[in-house]
Length: 388
Ligand code: SIN
Ligand code: CO
Image: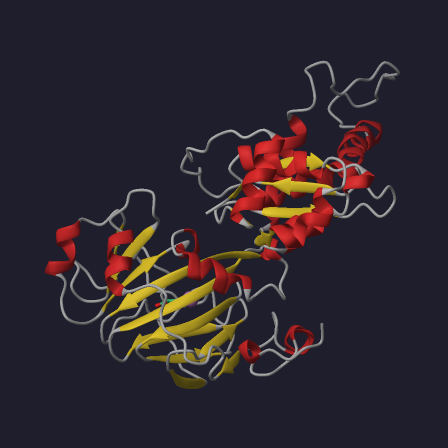
């Protein structure tokens, strides 16, 4: 803890969180010294031809109208038809396909993992841009290749300051309050809502480490759907003590109190909200490609682990845990599944959720604990962890 990080311009994560996170932008020159892009323009072009990869091509000038968006998969021959300037290719969730990007994401572990969404990569030739806009999420914009000029505006953005009739949210008017040219290894942090405009000065790759912050509407509708499935048709409003009302047209205060009571009781069940949230927030964004792995029994698993020496977490899965301080029975959540851990296995939750890979030596002591090898074997057989 309290160790300065080059990534944060030699600030301690604690200082960054207190002074900048969700508060104000920060430019960090040389956040990743000597950084070279782990992904090439050709690899990005290849990825966006794949049907399971989420990608977009933004054409400022060469489309049927200014600021046209084409959604992936993009046809391979499309690239030969593109002009020399003024377009951007964006590929979502690149950390799933490029292991070095999964490692890069891990460098942001000073933010809880569940808040980290994905790493998007963009490639643009000179003048490529997605226009001035705001995002609803925090973002770290890492310059990976070439140079890009970033302009930002910390002025409030009015609801009607957007170009009409296009598929993108682009601001009609944008006046920069600050601007910088970012070189490879430089990084710009932006809190939600800060208007920004990045224009490639030459062939350029930018990586965006994006965050997730569920909206109130999403939380409520998802939780409501989850709890609703637990009730059966007999559980409903009832009024065996009904008294005759003076006004049959009135909804009485007694009826309203009963309705409020039903809803308040559901929403005051902390344990069920906590468990639902663990499941909800670790749910896989997309279906995983089914991995062909051989099912191992506990003994074979241990043997293989000892031989291979290292176990890796599947980059496509989300792990998180909730510490139960009262009973010491931690709850482990993986891809929307709840794994209750008994007190003797409670230690496994932070061990599995904080790291993305484990050496055999690191886990050897833990493997002697009853139940831990069985848990790891189960996770292996479900393709949540793997060997290389
Ligand atoms: C880009 O990489 O061109 C756009 C990233 C962003 O503005 O969020
Ligand atoms: Co943006």
